Image 1 (cartoon, rainbow, N blue to C red):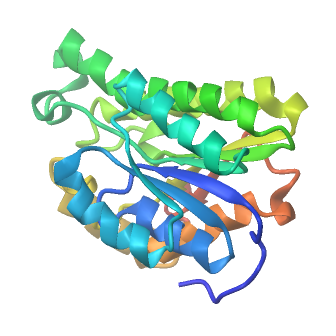
Image 2 (cartoon, helix red, strand yellow):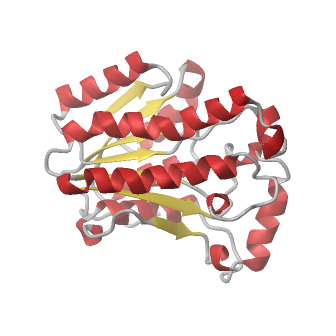
Length: 257
């Protein structure tokens, strides 16, 4: 965990996609908190709230709000609350991915139209929708982060349809960065190595990916959510004020071997 500092003091951020305390977004939330940021955290539904609320409390979140990204009314409500309470937004973390299990575990060529469309909507277009709503609140510039994986760039066994989906997410990140750059809004993707999270456990043969990362990564160990959080916090600070359109790998070097 990051030592406490004031690098993000006065900055206000929205975090979408915390699943539980061991999720990537939770690690980022704690890093943002350690750096002095004020946070609005969302949860998908009432069932998810019991897992997200302890993280929100630990991170000292100012707001804890429901948000199913497929529900436009809930999206409107979240940004209305942010505007009412803060009047601005400095950063947004989008950490959401979904694909129906049958499509996720099957070959890309066998993926259903419905499954592919749903995966693209929840995992990619939701970033566009959130960025669209965040833009007017980032009058003094800001940072938008999303979460990808090396399977966007290379074919990874058993990652299946999420490879094309994450590739689309990274391409979307680049296009958003160009469109929002004139407003000093930076857009970057985080690309952690395999992590033992609930979301990752849905990937078929995930233990194989874990073993491969430990064996082949130059650092010969897994990345932690705290390390991903540290990179996320760094990208939000002014130290990274010239960093945009990038995919930041936090994987012990695994992506080069």
